[in-house]
Image 1 (cartoon, rainbow, N blue to C red):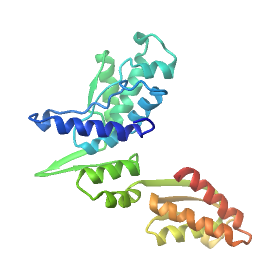
Image 2: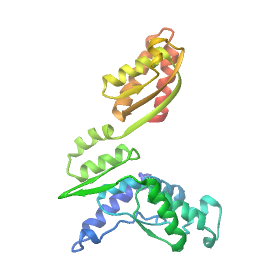
Image 3: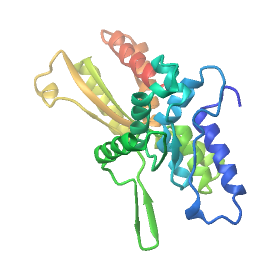
Image 4: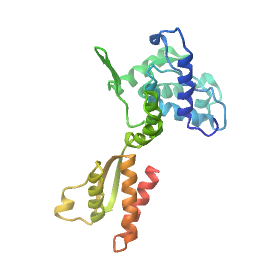
Amino acid sequence: VKGEDPIREIRGLLREALRRAIGIKEDKIALDPLIGFFREKNWYIRDSEVIRRLRSLLILGRPICIGVSRKSFIGKITGEEDPEKRLFGSLSATAIAVYNGASLIRTHDVKETVQAVRVAEFIRKEVDQVRVGDVEAYQFSFDLRAEDMEDFFIEIGSHPQGAKRMSDKAEMRIIYMRGVRNPVALVVKQEMLASGGEAALPSSSIVFGEERVDLVIIGNLKQLRRLIEKMDLNSKIGGSLSKDFGEVRDALSNLVG
């Protein structure tokens, strides 16, 4: 579908393929995210986005198999027209794919790729999947977007309306802000705590009242959008801090959307 989020589109295609895989044992199935399959405008941006968000395909419950070796998107990014000369770009893309959840790799250059994969796996180190008795557990990262989680909730049987409502709570963000007026930063912390989020700022900001401070805001999309509304309200009340509340509002709006 033109204009659709590429990961959601691919996830839909793979989900349909799984439904058609009648008679094939589940442990014999791996999923290929179709890198290089779509040749629309800016296809190389699409392929890059899929690799960056590859982890979101793990919600389908099968291993990810990926083939990026010498692909045209690498040539487009690097300017290298000869596929035979795309080794370094291929290794970079492969390492990123492995770091983002790929467990099976198709490649032309086996020896070099094995080395890249081993390094990527070692750096990743985190446990993505464990099984204890009859229970399987998967660990997802903050890379998952609200729309990814909405699809996931529906996948496990949640009602579509409930999935939509919960999705904003599932996408977490950590935002670092610098140079925020101290009174505004204190209001940010109060508002985040009130909504179940958090904001870290220097303890000295309360004791000594510095003019401007740095702070780290931790929350999900729902909490952050509520914070934006509060900052907007404060910016319209008037007073000496209106401009400062407005700046925080605009900065958050640009990041959160």
